[in-house]
Image (cartoon, rainbow, N blue to C red):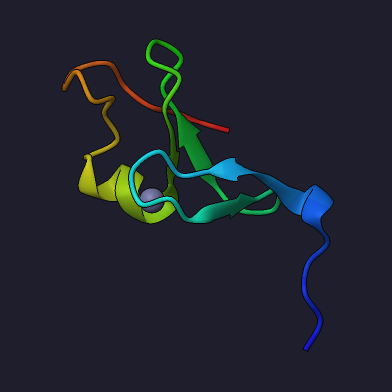
Length: 58
Ligand SMILES: [Zn+2]
């Protein structure tokens, strides 16, 4: 098993804490600075924690 190099980790999901990799879709809320993984973004219905600002796909 080959582990991806650390340089591919771009941060952690603000909600579930999962590591986010460069090649994955991730979502940011520019307003609050939240970064969410694909799964959490879907659960949040692609909205920021404030409930109305749309998340942006990075
Ligand atoms: Zn997450």
